[in-house]
Image 1 (cartoon, one colour):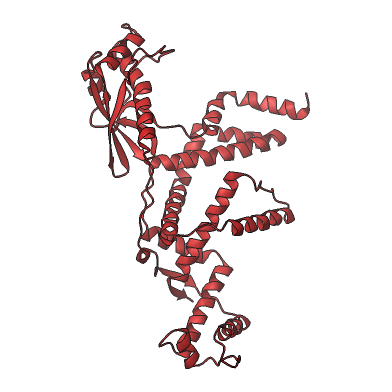
Image 2 (cartoon, rainbow, N blue to C red; image 1 turned 135 degrees about the vertical axis):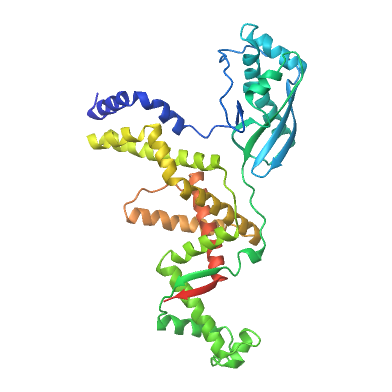
Length: 397
């Protein structure tokens, strides 16, 4: 074996006790799961885990999703199970396992199948997150009233993917931004004024003077002084955008305050999970060719405590990022903004060439995920520029 292969083998042996975390972080987000736990908390009801449930005994649909009620950020799911379904569940697990195992089978298999079938047949746009939990009763109360061979109804609650809010233009046009003023270069000022005069040529082809007559042609009632102020204001905003990211950051904060979106905790955890998985993959790649310090860094990452610490430190930033993405989508929808595919492609080529010149990793332009993220950035900048262009700016010294 090569030295690289030996180092990789040794490292994997050292990390064998943490492999569960590695797999959990590497797999895609799990689908909605149902568990025998009350929405208000409490421990799951103990039930024997089934090695193999065997063939389904009930030929008809054993469970039916009868109603979905959206209540704020949650969905209440109402299920009805037939007498035949509850009786067959006990027959499948056996009398020795009893009612807890039969109820566990119904919750682990029949109820999720009913949910999936109902969502598919109804074409529901509702997206559920995380684990559904019992609503309105404790696990002990459900188990106490569960009688195999008798009909059973139950309610469960699940977090819902947030809806993109419907917004009016007044909620994002005219926001107040506080920006640090930038000195406008004289050459740029003269260039802007010349371009303005070129747009309103005189009948003989000559350029007009920058006077009240020209200002009135630009906008009725506008004076030459006011026109100069408008040009100066525009140039100052452009200078602020070019000088730093402060203008966009101010626009983000104003937009978040104007377009509020509640982000479910489950969404934040899933995003943190994906980010931490990427961090672990990078650390693993570095450790395979690195020194003892790199391997020690990887070992320090591969614990649940390390992930919990990462979640605690990044939770607020992730929640803000998700809320901002919904706010930007809301404005984009309200404005009817459409992605210019050719412009995105042109910018992709520029970005790839910049990566090559600076000897940075070159992304795959044909990767759908990369293109989607690039398009999202394109829309983000378009929306934030719209906010900045139409904002009431308070210039700081």
